[in-house]
Length: 172
Image (cartoon, rainbow, N blue to C red; front, top):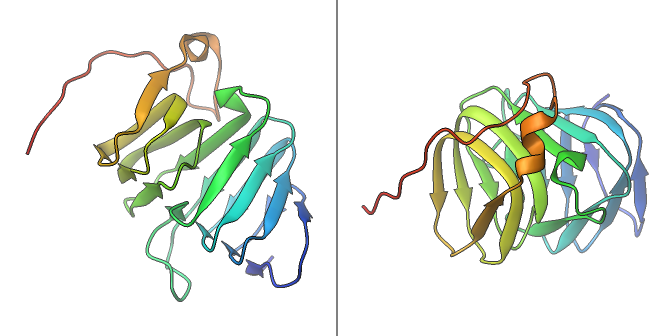
């Protein structure tokens, strides 16, 4: 499929499948249910919300060029993600490229982000429960990240279980 821009009042119920650029703004609400959503990029703006109704929802981004007005493969800086089941593995973001990922504005309260080649920025405060894997992770807004030990025994998006092997704080 092509790009998918939310232009009417919605709410939207997107089905698993292939989408180019998924752009949401203006307070729009989109519901996702279990399945794989292949996108080029995804951007939330203007207080828009993605609600995970059931999972696992696997959001796979390719990030092979950006739509006008977007900067990243995944950008949740202008909206929120609500994983209503409270299970991190029910919302998985997978990205193999090197473009940036921005998780901020209180988004991603329960999630697994696997982007080993990407610089990930987290801001906006609050709590994030799950796991975040990136080439670098910048937590600039005081968000508390809580690793969910239940992820150790789960196969996630074909990458296996997550185990904490080390952690350090760096102050620049």
